[in-house]
Amino acid sequence: MASLKTRIGSLELENPVMTASGTFGYGTEYADFMDISRLGAIIVKGTTLHRREGNPYPRMAETPQGMLNAVGLQNKGVDYFVDHIYPETQKIGCPIIVNVSGSCIDDYVETAGIINTLDGIPAIELNISCPNVRQGGMAFGVNPESAAQVVSAVRKAYDRTLIVKLSPNVTDITQIAKAVEGAGADSVSLINTMLGMAINAETRRPVLSTITGGMSGPAVKPVALRMVWQVAKAVSIPVIGLGGICCATDAIEFLLAGASAIEIGTANFIDPSVSEKVIDGINEYLDRHGFESVQDIVGGLITD
Amino acid sequence: MKKYQYDLRVADNVKVGTNTVLLTLSFDGKTFPDIVAGQFAELQAPSDKVLLRRPISIHDADPDNGLVSFLIQIVGEGSRSLAQAAIGQTVNAVLPLGNGFSYLTAHSVRPLLIGGGVGVAPLLLLGRRLSEYGVRPTFLFGARNAGALVRLDEFSRYGNIFVTTEDGSAGEKGFVTGHSLLLDSECFDRIYSCGPTPMMKAVAKWAMEHETPCEVSLEHKMACGIGACLCCVEDTADEGNVCVCKDGPVFPIERLKWLH
Ligand SMILES: Cc1cc2nc3c(=O)[nH]c(=O)nc-3n(C[C@H](O)[C@H](O)[C@H](O)COP(=O)(O)OP(=O)(O)OC[C@H]3O[C@@H](n4cnc5c(N)ncnc54)[C@H](O)[C@@H]3O)c2cc1C
Ligand SMILES: Cc1cc2nc3c(=O)[nH]c(=O)nc-3n(C[C@H](O)[C@H](O)[C@H](O)COP(=O)(O)O)c2cc1C
Ligand code: FES
Image (cartoon, rainbow over all chains, first blue to last red; front, side, top):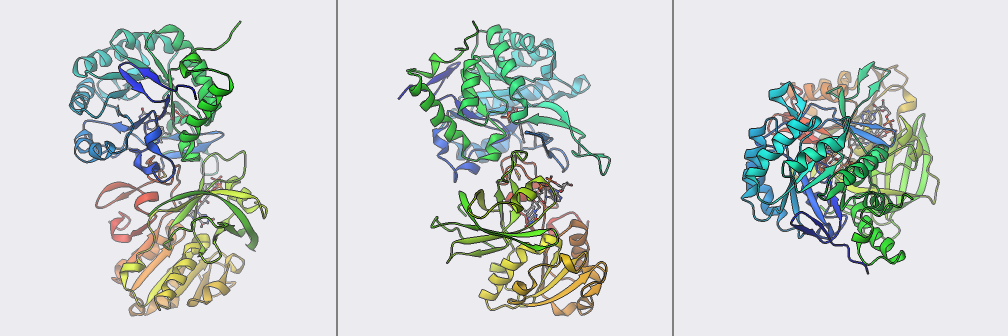
């Protein structure tokens, strides 16, 4: 049996398979379907400084081989997480990573600072796709300056592994990746959802309450794979790949493109035990090809 | 309540109305879960064009023979492909999900079960469960026309059935809330309802005006069905946005903001 161990900053993972924020609840929702302690890590729902109600219903539309969501970061706030959810997550038995969101730099910093006090949370994933309310609602992650600003501010308040999750809704994602690396990120994860839209022709209305929403699922995989490949060449920190991963083969493609670990999102809705199957499938692939460690295939794409 | 994910074998799949099928799945010896009437399953539609599971109410459950059945109305690709699943084929199911009707604790002796369209589906299992407690409910069904009324023989095993149709081709003409049965508001001590939202809103209004406790089952669009994605929310008076798949699909009407 090959070694599946992988490293993200100072965080060592038993295997490279994590579950993506917003698609796996707080982990326990899936405990009836698989052994969630086997996961490399669970990345929990986007957490903000204050409670957020999120967007009105309808928040979801199925599209060909994908879906749009407009959940709008509904969560009960970081204090509720610390008091009520954090203790439960510590019983799961795999690393728990908190996805942090905000609408201004101060909110990000304060939220990260509170999570910094939790010894059982070894890393945060900073979601910089959120709109910056002080700058006309433009997302932090769409230009290198604002992305670097929020990351360097959080870096000062947060001592453990800092993963920055990149938005694909940009012209050149490598520019953003380099900017956040320079600002002190230990790792980048990509991609977040792609901006999309669905219309009901019969009613002549948008399907989502917010008109536009974030697209995910198999349909985004080729874009995600391309971006992971580009970013892995551009930065020297570990890259975490995600976007449409539904099976072990998809995951291996991301590892070959340069990802040190992967996340599974929308596929959890289709098959609630998929991530366990992906762990086993990667293992089987490594054995079949005679690799001793998953590290042997990270960035192993043959291009000549 | 433990949830299961199973490949279940199609034991039967028959047309029961103009646009509706009765799909029966067999557990073939797998652990049969405890099912509360009003709970649902997330079924993987056997079609390459469908990505997400489809939430479908549990219509009937037969633990002795390891069978669970669903009443499915064909509205799009997912329901169409489920309606065409052949006997012997397997359908992947996640079940039982959500919270059902409160008959276990409600101690209602004269319940009225109001169903509209394919919303009658969960009311059969509810009728069966009530009969196990020695309660004989009354059914009131609304449909577009006589051809859209399905499984009346099965329902009649558990209670008397009254009907309204929009075109008058069966029962009284009009909507359920206009049925003469409701003229005597003292007749019923509780209402359980499932159907199109406008119908349930009218039922909720009637129940509120006549001070009759009432529960409705919502049919929001879902992605995960297990409370993980927050796509299926309904705004409640007590807790704000809650997941229909996990906190519902059945809600007492006073929790909803419909009548505020
Ligand atoms: C808890 C729950 C229980 C349900 N029980 C049953 C049941 O027992 N029998 C049954 O036939 N259906 C039931 N439904 C509705 C069923 O899930 C949808 O009809 C189905 O998902 C449609 O899938 P499709 O691919 O066939 O259609 P799609 O292509 O997804 O949609 C076709 C059309 O139907 C509309 N539609 C889709 N989903 C819904 C919905 N949830 N509510 C209202 N309109 C919708 C769409 O807007 C579209 O116009 C239930 C829904 C929920 C949430
Ligand atoms: C319903 C839903 C909610 C999500 N919520 C968050 C979130 O809170 N924070 C975040 O960074 N990403 C969130 N995402 C994005 C996913 O984590 C992931 O980046 C994206 O879905 C692409 O991966 P996938 O194709 O495997 O789903 C959400 C995605 C979905 C579908
Ligand atoms: S459908 Fe995912 S939370 Fe209800």
